[in-house]
Each structure stands twice: as C-alpha cells, then as structure tokens.
Amino acid sequence: MESYQFDSIGLAHFSFAILSMILGALIIFIKKGGSFHKKLGYVYFGSMIGLNVTALMIYKLFGFFGPFHVFALISLVSVIAGFVPAYLKKPKDTWLEYHYEFMNWSVVGLYAAFWSETFTRFFSFQGWDGFWILVGTATGITVAIGAYLIKKKKSYFLEKFGGKKYASVD
Image 1 (tube, rainbow, N blue to C red):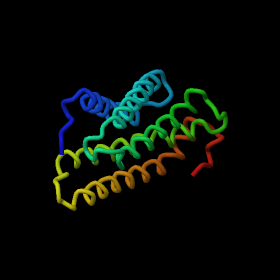
Image 2: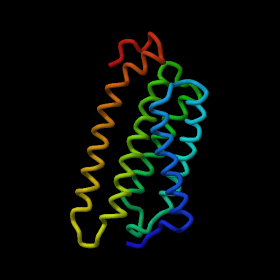
Image 3: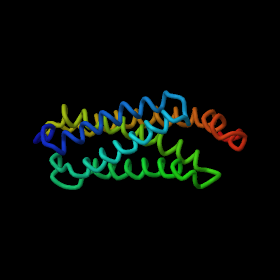
C-alpha cells in the first residue's frame, strides 16, 4: 500500500479528522444550545465537510472509488442533514430531532471511520484476509455502542431542549 500521509491532501484529511474527532467529542459533552455550542458546531460542520471532501479525493488504497468513498458520501449527507435543520430551525416541529439524530450519527460514523483508517494504516497487508474482519468488527462495535447511546439519551435531550412537545418521545 502506498502511503499518502505526507502529501497535501492526506495531510489536510488527517488534520480535518483530528479536529473533527476533538470537536465531535467536545460537543457531545458540553451544554447544548448556547453560543459556545453553536460556534463549536459551525467549526465541526466545516471540518467534517473538509474531511469528507478530502476523503473523496484519496484513491491510493484501492486505486478507484471504493467502499470508504461510499461511507464518506454517507457522512457528508449525515452532517449536512444535521446542520441544515438546526441552522434554519425548519421543519418547525421536528428540526431538533433531525439535528440530534443526524449530528450524533455523524460523530458515530466519524469514530467508526477512525477504526477503519487505523486498521488500513497498520493491518492492510497484501494477502491478509483478516483485514476486513478487523475493520468490520471495530466498525460494528462502534456503531452498536453509538446506536445504544443515541437511543438512550434521545428522550432526555428532546425533552430538555425541545420542551413539552417531546415529553413522550421514546
């Protein structure tokens, strides 16, 4: 596997990834709705756009549009689908729910991609069949934990920040 870690696109991709991972974790743990949350959210959104655009420019692993590019497109859609409703506050009755779901999934996807990238860097030996098992297992565990936490915290989040309208949401 040819390394791209020192070319400009690879460096930009790496930088956006680190920034996105730090901001994604921070945003999950800080108080929601305030100006600090919004400012960090804008930077997270921009770094995720940069991350996904640079991901779509990297072809050195497979030499063609591969499975990681598909996940970059899904990530791009997810972060846009989480940002736009919060930015526009539309649709009026459900924007908060869309924002919660899509932004949380964008962070889960980011950390799942971290495992894929890590294992690609360290374990993608030619002829080693365990690579995809490693990537799939780590991604599956990350997604399962993320799904559990998103579902568990959803009612609390929506009731706290969305008011009575969301008091009965599961």
